[in-house]
View (cartoon, rainbow, N blue to C red):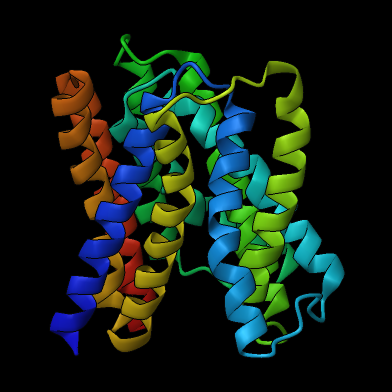
Length: 278
């Protein structure tokens, strides 16, 4: 089971990596048009699944489903925007600090407790972010802030999903997110719409495919493997993305940025392992 779970996480990390690469390659398109196609592509999978399995598309906790979708839309838009400004590996690393924000929000909204040692690990991860900006002058502040705020809204996504609980099927949650992202992304893209040409159509439509399968295989891995063994493997996305960024776009990283990224991964991995042991 563990071997299969590891394989699923590697597939998920690769799918996320190609999604990041294609978003970066579509630099001439507005971020809203990219969000539109990313969401639209996934609907070709979510709607048939819900219809085939006779699951209500409207769901049960409609207010929370809409709220989760709005938070997710803001997070996704800002993350895609950050990729336009900073190296992909840096953007992905910062996005992964979302659990820090989620833990903070959980204290107030869910009354959950966080062990003191977890705050230490969160501190290590956040130190990585500080090093990325404080010591790495080559990382634009604008891009870093987009990634940081994206992580904050991703943290809010975690909280709303926890509030939804088992009252709605996971695909219903994703479908809401994709429908709202398609509609809002499409409306905001109208003024800056660029008609895709040739292979651009294929790249834009593939965003939803990679996004869907990345989420699907990550979920499969979590279902069959021990979380503290499998979850840290999601950070392979950072490594894969850095390699692809280097090869595809000639992105480079300073020693400070590498140290910052390593601290983020180290702190978050320790948190996952410690949290699941408690």
